[in-house]
Length: 332
Ligand code: P6P
Image 1 (cartoon, rainbow, N blue to C red):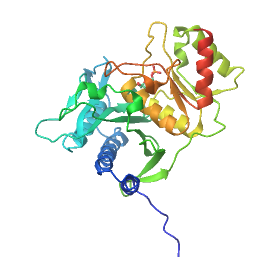
Image 2 (cartoon, rainbow, N blue to C red):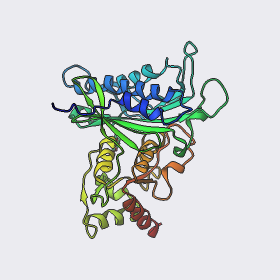
Image 3 (cartoon, rainbow, N blue to C red):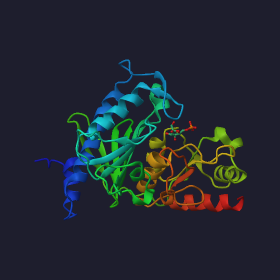
Image 4 (cartoon, rainbow, N blue to C red):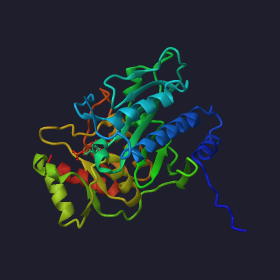
């Protein structure tokens, strides 16, 4: 008789992981399960966006002056409603909200702080390019019952977990809680995330691929220009750039390579946000054997001073990030 393959749902995996920690209360398991549910709901709308009037902009701008897409607004609401009532969360922060988000008094609060970009890469929605949700999880540090802004402004090194959902040819949830990186693929026929990529490790040797928007070449520092010129000439690298961070990072995690969003002479902080883009991706890549640097320091060492602060990022295979830092230092 054909052996039924050993199907491990994300719920089963989380429970088995929880058993490894005798002091675990089950709160983290429930939190990740709630995020997985939100991912399914967001994924359902993303995957049918072409069929209903949920494409396009809402005619408003988000906190960064970027046109808000209808799916951005929807995904933000789904993440909030999946978490606000659970009693697991002390406070939240979202790319779509200027201020940090308090848990309403009508709901109990918990110990976790969840910071998220509900739909990253949303400028790609209308052209059917993969987009994603990114989340970062901290523990509340302040002593009050409910979280504060201070609880959101923790360095990436203090994250208890981080993950992303990639709405692509399949919907994948990838997360780390500090004991490896684990990938789950949604089986839409049963509505379950199934463990498809246990213990993800960046490949050695890595694929020689760099990923950066070269349209900005003239805005870069001399060191950055020399780095990319070296990669594409003597370095023998290929180039892949999707323009959706979750998709570019996911490819880099699976194949190896170097993802960059560098600073520009006029924009020394770069574009990507520390709390809900760079820091969670840094945790994931480091847990898989990679690295993430600003070009001069570990992304996860930066102590945030504001919710939406931006950082340059060089992320991917350890040896490629090391090389980038060395070449940038030559022209510093
Ligand atoms: P650019 C998408 O808007 C995003 O925030 C990231 O997902 C992506 O890596 C980056 O911006 C793309 O920016 O300037 O190359 O279009």
